[in-house]
Every structure is written in C-alpha cells, then in structure tokens.
Image (cartoon, rainbow, N blue to C red; front, side, top):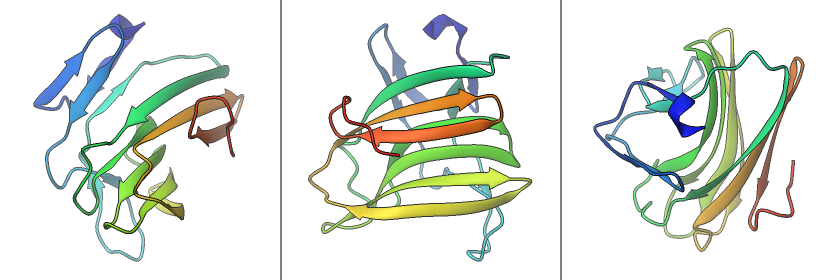
Length: 148
C-alpha cells in the first residue's frame, strides 16, 4: 500500500518503513486558506494515495511526542487541490493545552473546529471515511473507541 502513495510537496526530512511513516516538516508549513486570520498557506507536505473509490475508510495512528512549539501539529489530510481539502490534527498551543481540531476548506475558504485537550496526550488515532459525497473524521485516544 505504501508503494502506491505519492508526495505532494515532498519534505526534506522523512522516513518510510512498512510499519511507520515519520515526517518532520519545515517551520511555517501549513494548509490554511481565506479566513479572518488574513494569511494563506498551501505548502505543507502531503503523502497521499489517489482513488476513485466512493466508499472507503482508513485509520492512522499519529504520534506527536516531539511537539513543543506553538503551531506544531500532527494529523491527517484528504487533499483534492489548494481550494478543496480537509484535515484533522492535534496542534500544540502551550504547556497547558493543545487543540484537537479539523479544518475543512471548500472553494478556497477554510473553517476550523477545535476543542482543547491536555498536553499529556501524545498520540491520536484518526479514522477517515467516505460514503459517496459525505466524509466523516473520527478520533480516538486508544484506536478502539472513536468520537465524531
């Protein structure tokens, strides 16, 4: 399966094995479009696999133990183009909390949904599912009990 994946903006620092994909991104890389923050970024590395399937699900376990700087984030993305994509991630804010969130970008406008979680959390499971034109992102602390 990993052999079918392709880079969009290949990062300088990554390692891929049969069991693990480890990516270290450069500072100031992100996926974000037109909001009241007045900045746009479409420069984050994305490792993805193309599919025409209209029904699928996949799970990913992320580890962000080394996130220590504001805006460090780790998660998943489904990327169509710079104006249409969605992502879910944990983003480090400070020593007291971090953000578990999702961003949906449709026709070039991003919308962010977030909730604060403890900085003790260092791993997150995600399950992304497609059912025709509908998508669902779920998260789990243990890989068994998923929350929408």
